[in-house]
Structure formats: C-alpha cells, structure tokens
Length: 334
Ligand SMILES: NC(=O)c1ccc[n+]([C@@H]2O[C@H](COP(=O)([O-])OP(=O)(O)OC[C@H]3O[C@@H](n4cnc5c(N)ncnc54)[C@H](OP(=O)(O)O)[C@@H]3O)[C@@H](O)[C@H]2O)c1
Image (cartoon, rainbow, N blue to C red; front, side, top):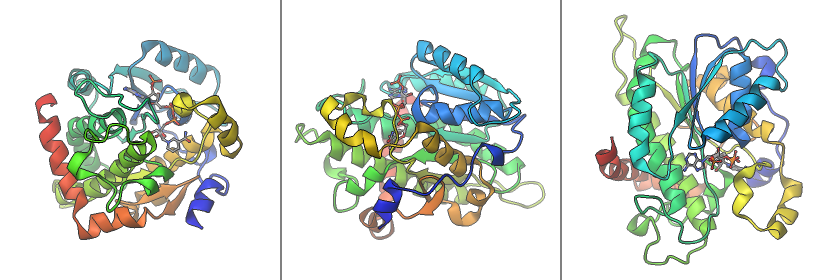
C-alpha cells in the first residue's frame, strides 16, 4: 500500500505560496542545475535565498541560471536572491575539499544542504576516479565527504538559530526498498568487485539505502554533538532522507528508449520532486524533533523506510558501521 501511495501520491502539501521570504539565508544544493534540484533552486532563488549550486558543469549551471531567472515558476511576487556555482565533480573525491573550502570563506552560515545529485543505472562496471562503483561513489561516498566538510558550519548555524531551522537533506528513492538483503548494504563487498556483472538496479538501490542510513545516523550524531549555546540550549541540525517521487528528469539518461516508453506514463513533473525536497528542507513541521532521522515521501508527507533497512539500523547498527567505514575512507580527501 505504501509503495502504491508513493508511486501515485496525493498533491504536494507544501508549495511556493507557503515559503516565506528567504532573504539572508544560505542554501546549498548538489545537482541543482537540473531535474529536481533545478526546481528546488528556482523556488529558493525567487523567494530571496542565496542559492549555491554544487555541480560539475559550468555550462549546465549557466543554462540553469538563465532558466531560473527568466522563469519564476509558480512563485508569485518574485523577490530574486542570488545564485552561485561551486564546481565539484562527485566522481573525484579530490575535487570536493578545495571548492568547498573556498565557498566556506564566503559565508558564516548554511541553513540547509540538500544532497540531491545522483546517478542511476550507468553501464555496468562504471567506476569513480577512486575506483568505487559509480553510483556508490557518487551518491554516497562523495556526499559523505561533502557533508563532513559542511558539518561545522551546519552545526554552528544551528546553534545560533531557532530549533529545527537548519537541516541536512539526503535524497534517497523508493528504490532503497530493493536494496540488498539482509540490511540494505552489502558490507562485505560494497562495490560488488567480486560480482561486477550485478544489475546496476541493485547497486543504485544500495546507494539509496546509503542515503537513508546516513540520514538516520547523522540525526543521532547531530543531537549528541550539538554545542551548548550561551543561554544553555542545544540546537542541532535536523537530518532527513526522502523519496522525491517518480519524476520526468535526466536521471533516466542511461535507460533505453523502450524502458522510457513503458515508464514515462507513471512519471510526474520534476516540480513535484522539487516541492518534496522543499517540504523536507523548509516546512515548519519537518523541523520538529520527530522528523529528525525521518523519511519524507512524495509529495511532502512523513513515510516509513524499508523494513529490512530499518532492521539493519536497529538490530545490526548499520548506521554506525557505515559512518565509521566512510570516515576512514574519505579521511585522505578532507
Ligand atoms: N527522477 C526520479 O524519478 C527520481 C526518483 C527517486 C529519486 N531520485 C533522486 O533525485 C535526485 C535528483 O535526480 P533527478 O531526477 O533530478 O536527475 P537529474 O536531472 O539527472 O539530476 C541529477 C543531478 O546530479 C548531478 N550529478 C550526477 N553526477 C554528478 C557528479 N559526478 N558530480 C556532480 N554532479 C553530478 C547531475 O549533473 P550532470 O548533469 O552534470 O551529470 C544532475 O545535476 C537523485 O539523487 C536521484 O537519485 C530521482
């Protein structure tokens, strides 16, 4: 029933008209120049936010700027903010630190980071520069490295603002329900190096389980590590994973024409995915404590993660295991 309702969801719950003036706030979106991320950035920009798009193509960024500036979408009374580009190629961990360090010299706050960029279904055997299976390396490892570099500014911004305003949003997918048994991650061989011909659907699904697991683990760490403010409070970053919905975007670029023919009719406009990400990052209700570590489903509702992934978190400690493994792996690049 839940899978059905995620595939054919009710209308978006949080839309442009619900978003307040975002002047003075800083937002970072990986993959913000296309698809779901583009729609999210459109709203953030026309509501006055400073929008930082992290991506690898200057050309795609410039096309997005033109598109966003000339088209406010459903935002009435646009109050333009600003757009900027931070060039990072998530397939190469060495590109993350220099670019993010430079960005960090330009800001004293970061209100929300959306870890949105992703790759799905590349040719079997595709790898990152550091030899990770492409989807694991891009969707999980690189975002973990990026998040490690952003954690201090997210933490300090959270400690100076009202509870629930600062958030880290990890973009997953309904496909995380198809991730490897028993707990979502094949810890023995996360890159499937010993079975390289494994379906890229399985490895994509595993990467999307990674997003859910990291969101849950960071939710706990963010509470535990929140600094005590001068007035004795401990405001922490809220961490949420989400399924943006099944959407018409470039994500299917590696699929065949035949696949597109059969799948297209169940896909929704990419704006709906943008609104789901907006709900997770900005809606007042998702800033509540019960959403920390939670999972948002299309197009802006609280959902439940897959039972086997949940079991891994609660019975096998997969959050801690994955976090510590990634910490070791990305350390040379931070
Ligand atoms: N569309 C759906 O139905 C759907 C369903 C569930 C979940 N999602 C998730 O939603 C997120 C957004 O996807 P989308 O549908 O909007 O697809 P999209 O239009 O293809 O957007 C993906 C973005 O990720 C960027 N990206 C990929 N590899 C990168 C790299 N190595 N370095 C930097 N950026 C990179 C892409 O940039 P380039 O153009 O430069 O490659 C692009 O901007 C993904 O995490 C996806 O898994 C989508």
